[in-house]
Amino acid sequence: VLTIGIDVGGTKIAAGVVDDDGHLVARRHIPTQPHDPVAVVAGITKIATEMKAVAPAAAAVGVGAAGLVDVRTGTVLGAPNIAWSNLHLRSMLEQRVKMPVIVDNDANVAGLAEATYGAGRGRGDQVMVTVGTGIGGAIVIGGKIYRGARGIGAEAGHIVIAAGGAKCPCGNLGCFEAMASGNAIGRVARERAAGPEASDARAVLERAGGSVDSITGEMVGDAAREGDAFACSVLAEVGRWLGIGLASLVNLLDPDIVVVGGGAAAGTGELLLGPARASMREHVIGHDWRAETPVAAASLGFDSGVVGAAILARELA
Ligand SMILES: [Zn+2]
Figure 1 (cartoon, rainbow, N blue to C red):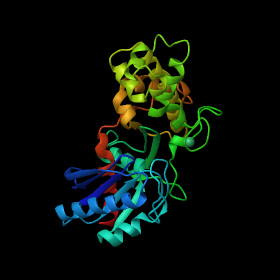
Figure 2: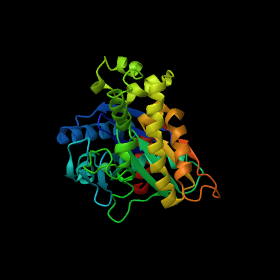
Figure 3: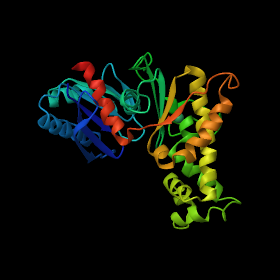
């Protein structure tokens, strides 16, 4: 069976037609206009219609959308990076595209894709954490996404791991996302470069045109890959927080595997994951006698959103 998967993020809308083996048989992407919900819906409609034309046999459409999504009603309740709220995305798309549609959170569908065809393939219950600009979470139990009573659970990015810590876009202090995301990498580097470590931060500062305020997580990742000691120590610090968050998830769920994806994780690799594993080990209960929970890098890359949304759509096929 063929299904269409659509991944709606803050910068682009990606779509593809996915076959039984999880292969993308067609794909396309267009930019998102995150400040204009009408344009976003028009973009999703356009790309879905194009995919339907490419694969008239496709049975259903799955959408992974950034934000809090109630999958039962197909409503996007709200999102930090796209200006939509209380939008009945499923019914709007069903009317326009004339196909059955299912809508879920983008991190949930990415987790489903990794569990089915990626780093978690063949494993049991698992958690995926997506480390990008923010942090998304997915819990896959018995091969199904766990969503909670209202369909908006598994928001791993907003478990508080450092009470009174850095401010999170959600308004709370010390969320996992505030402490261990790609944005956190940039924040920690800026804080440290503005202090007594300014001279150590030279290589990172150069990338930012000499302005501490312009330092981003990507610049830190780039410098770290070239072996810069300051950048590596920033990643070690943020990796330590990443491990603390992962340990909380492992303590709660005892998953078979933890999968870590997202652009910030992909761009830093073991420079971030290594310290995260060490810190997770330290913070997991019973670490002296229990088997260590493996932490694996996601393997599907940016396709995981599209593939996961298409897997979800099989429920309607
Ligand atoms: Zn938060």
